[in-house]
Image (cartoon, rainbow, N blue to C red; front, side):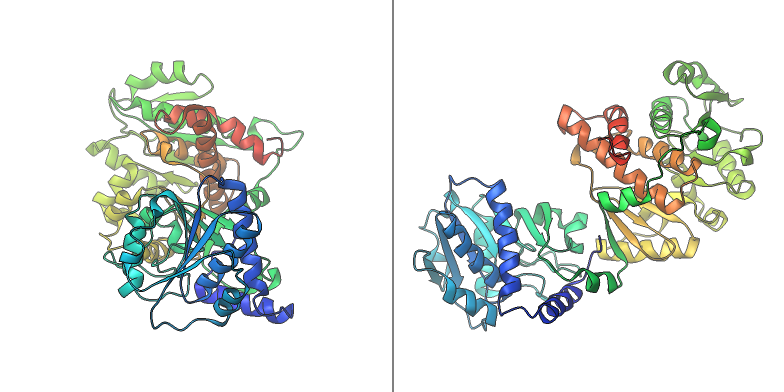
Length: 504
């Protein structure tokens, strides 16, 4: 799924209207019906609905929703701030269509709202949509601050009002804090960025029938990883395959006190389809790994507590994953440098391997093409530079991947994958329960296993983050978010992969 800009979506609206010869307001009616369908399926009737409408097309959406909900026998009131703003034609059309049974409350100051018991209603925010290009002021800003202060559920139409869709929103700007955002046609970039999570707890994308051919013709660097794109890249396992068919993965893991990271990464790799797995780790971890993961072959480093040497013939492996738990000892840093200089097989670098790169940035120039790095935001800043906002981070991510011909899996909510081509892929799976120690170690094992099986770097990243997040979602269903641990994610990888195989 493409993530389109506000301007591109306006072009798609216009093209669809002209190509299908739609009557005035017809496309808006589709959007309102899509929102209403979601609302009916997900919101009860126990509360009255208060819809706040701005002067533009987002407000027109709100008025159309008010009419539709009224037809479904919901108790609905609409609220219109009275300012000197000019009403759009679709707004005026839907205001005329609004039945008399739906009250229209016009107000010039917030005091009008203070005695209407709105804290006991369900709020629908239809003040402003993606066309907004500057922070709101005056009565609109005051309205948003008032709504946020009600501490009741707010559902935003398309985007939370006040949020800029394609650029950074100033911290001091008034923005609706929505519990749910029902966005039309395409996920909005701003809704996928960590800095904006306070403005939208959950996003749901609904289709409104925009012309598919036109959308396919639009160019964008931003993409959303959904089931369709994942299944299109998944390779069924051949009937007459054997363990050699699916590659031999090597994992370089662990140090004294951090053997748990090695076990988690190894178990995730085993559960992700690699034919053979060898694990190189300090001698102290030999018996631990043989017991915890009997399916893996264990290579003991000469040193008791840290990794100091590469295994013999490292170039024979189909893919190598390195980093979880390895520490920052001088000998380990030297081993990482030797790996980058001498080994040209597909690499996946995580955790302390990234910290070693950050401490000696000359190593970045030695990364083999299509190396995969899996940092969290702070690790990425250590590799690059401190950043002001998430939009700057996306630009730096593109530049970094292009400069070093690598792939970067920037971990977090809506994990973002950077590619050498400049395309960015945002993940749709996962939940806050996965923000726990060891979750990233598991992801390293998954992606390494996929690379060993012959998946391209891009496909391994996309399949890896989606399946990792899906396993986390399945674990959440069993354990909840608070109690979820990395082992729960690994235990659910089988179910996650089963969905890709068409049996889940």
